[in-house]
Length: 76
Image (cartoon, rainbow, N blue to C red; front, top):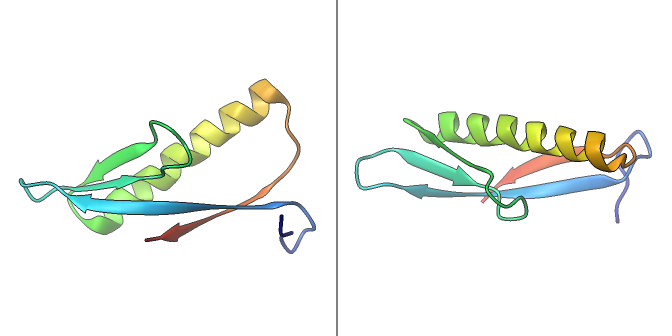
């Protein structure tokens, strides 16, 4: 596991994109089940899925009492 600048473990999540037949974009983070979001542009979908992922991660930290991590996202 790599460490971020703060010395905390670094967690990277890959974002996958797809385009629906109606033109909407969908972004998904496969490592976080159920974390997917739509947007009218690829950028909107990316921003929405990152926000949702952060909420899910925050809930997990609160519930599981896991330590601090540095989180980053990479578009596929």
